[in-house]
Image (cartoon, rainbow, N blue to C red; front, side, top):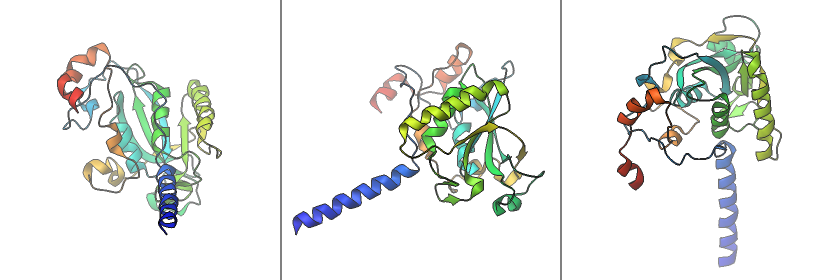
Amino acid sequence: MKRKIMLILMICTVFLLASCGDNAGRPSTEPEPEDGYVLKDDVTNINEALNYDDSEMHKIYFAGGCFWGVEAYFAKLYGVQDTVSGYANGTGENPSYEDVIKGDRDFVETVEVTYDPDRISLESLIDHLFQVIDPTSVDKQGNDVGVQYRSGIYYSDESDAEIVKEAVKDEQQFYKKDIVTEAAPLDNFYKAEEFHQDYLVKNPNGYCHINLQALNDVKIQPIIRDEEIVKQLSKPKEEKETN
């Protein structure tokens, strides 16, 4: 009897772990920095304290399920100056949210990520995307199902094409199922309604399929001109070592 109960528990555990892994993404492929700064708990977005006036900004577009969570996650990454939720690569012009959820125009919920490549690389941004999505899931992320929730990386600069396509190709090594994340040029992008912008900032307890807490202890290695402000907004070294 005990052996039967143990067997049932083991089977249940396997299914539980499998279900958690479906939408958990994977660990970072980048080595953990030996040194760096960990932000204080009350610093929600380091980028709001940085000066981007003299930076040459680049853009990349990420789709990974509901754009509320994708936008909130990438907004917190050091080096991301702005994030905008919108609808991309569909048919027609200026779609509304109601148009998009019908699915017949093939728009996908997408986040425009404006970043400084001197602070964070495109490769690192893509790596972060794959940490929080399941790239083998067809038209589904988390609890969201439909063509508008497919995953994708869309580039507006042709010089990014090779990096994007190679990153998606390399990602296959982590999965037995085929990667379905699109790697394609950006055909169009329309900003979503204001209600959707910074949704999780306005509604901290709102729905999110991404674990935003995963960024809490990420080490930041700032460029020289940011080091002083990052240091001021980070935990003391002693606290970092004991936590």
